[in-house]
Each structure stands twice: as structure tokens, then as C-alpha cells.
Image (cartoon, rainbow, N blue to C red; front, side, top):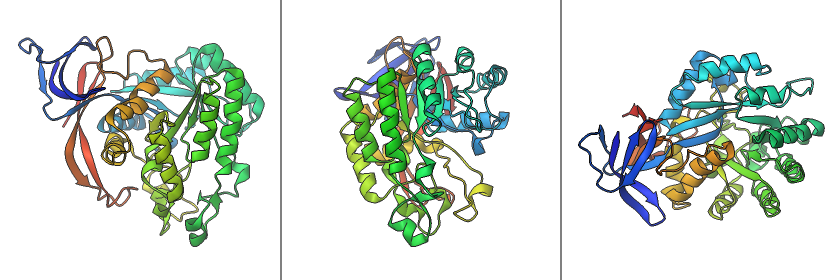
Length: 409
């Protein structure tokens, strides 16, 4: 397969390039490659990007079944995501190597590269799972909640170091909130809803960052929502800690005013913060303080959303528009350039997972590629979307995974 006339982002800016693919690998990147003996895709006017790697996705309603696996893979392709790590806090719990082997068999049949995380502990009894067995049987990372007892977190970091796998940590202390429903601020007060304080996140970030530094573990601080969290992480990175910060696209593009009118489709965890905090996150992104961007894809059925705000589930289904959202709110708005977008959506996630052949358009790398049209635009009319009424720019046109054209629209 030969992709011709694509616009590739380089240190010199956008450059028209041809990319030759053979046996699932990129074998040549140059101008005016010979097209006489290859299937040709004319990419004139389209951006060519490495396939996005999302480290924070979930099945619909956090429930594992074949339909949800297939739906997730299909949704990923539409959003330009070619590799994704599924958070293991789904039902049934991933508590044995037997179930992991079954799940791995199912997801290996998916169109994209789906990977599983392994839960650090069981849901109720604070008992450590057989992490070594789960990692030996294909789990790509360990998933932990920061508020579980510190000994479990310590042992998780030791396993992560020993097995050379990342530890994903969701930083939140529920005991610092009174069953909070949204950001603790003016909008919550106006609606009469209990708030989720920033300290419930930042205090846990400080604890986890200090432990990560002490034990030398590779740790991803999942879906952060405050500038202070990024500042704490930055201080520990200066100590040579192997620490990565992750922020969702929604926390750069929306604030807690989206919850006004009891809009349950804006009910996320961590919550959307006030506008001042959103702007602070954007500034931190400009300064290079954010390592990984995620869609935080966690779709919930209307059954769990079209209810009272107090009863509605946290979560958003957003991965189908992931690249479009990132382009609209970050690149087109001149927050970051394409090279930085590739760094936080492709290169850094690949580095975290130890995928040395992904995340870059270069000879020898896997042919996981996305062709993106920056000229297209459309208005979101789905009333169940957080972005209803917004005009989004850009559209994924084609997706190549392992050298095979899997999406063509």
C-alpha cells in the first residue's frame, strides 16, 4: 500500500510525503515514491498522523461482553484510535488468569489493538490479586485506586517495577467529599448539589507521586483535573521520577457550567471544573506539563443518564470524536501544534506501554496511521452529547491498522 501526497507534521512544519507500507510496517517515507506496483491511496489535502493511543477507555456501562468489545473497537476507529487500554473496573471483575485469557482471546479478534489493564485488588475486601499471573498472561498495565490501603498501593508499585509495566492510578479520596456529584463551586451551589473538592484529587496526587519516586515505579496519574495536580507532578518529575500526567480532552474544552440545568451528560469523574481552572489547565498544556491526552471514554446508556442528576451515572462516550475534539479545541485554537498533539496522543502513550514500534511515522514503525481532513466541519446535533450545539472541525477519513485499511469514509 502506498499513501501519496499526505501532509505529515515535521519539525519544519507540514510537508507533503508519500508513505510506503509492506507487511504491516512503514518501509519508506519520501516524496514522489513510485506508485506503479502498489495499491495507492491519494491523500492530497489530508493530514497523516500516527494512530492515536488512548490509555483510558471503558466498555459501555462498564460491562464486559462481545457486543461491547466490538462496539468499542468500531468507535475507536472512527476517532482515529488504533490502540487502546481498557480500564479493568468492569463487570465481571477481571480477577483470574482464566478470565483474562478468555478476554484476551476475544479482544485479539477486534479490529484495533485493544489491551487490558489488571485490577490491583478486589472490589470489596482489599485483597491483592495475583498481579504477576495477570501481567504474565498479557495485561498491559496495573490499575489502582489511590484511596485503597497504602500497603496495596506499595505492593502495586513494587510489582510494576519488577515486571516493567506501568501502574495507572486514579487519584481520588472519596472520604474528602460528601458523596459529591460535580465540581465544588458556584454552579453546584446554584443547583443545590454536593460538590467534589479539588483537595480530594490533589492530596492523593501528592501521596502517589511521593510513593512513585520512592519505589521507582512508572506511574500514570489518571485523568487529572486541576493545575495544582500538574504542579505537584512537575516537582516530582524534577526529581527524576518516572511519572506521567494524563488529562482528558473534556477538561480542556468544557467547564462546570455545562452541568447547569442539571445536564447529566456533563456529569464526569473527575468533574469538569470552573472556567478559571480550565484556563489554568490549558496554560499548563502550553507549558508542556501534560504528558498524555485521553478521551476518558466511558459511555453510559440513556437509561443511566436520563434520570435525576443525583442518580445519573458518571461518564461520557466520546472516543468517536476524539481526534476531532482534540483538533478543534487544541490545534485549531492555537493552544498546541500538531507535533505536540502527536506527542501527547501517540508518542508518549506508546512509550508508557513500551511499544517501541508505534507512535511515530518513520521507517520500521508499525503502519498504524490516520488520514484526517482538517477542512470538514459539522455541528453536533445529538442532544445526548456534551458538545451538542458546538461546531467541530476536522474528520477522520481513513484508518490503517497493521497495514490494513480498516476505515474508509
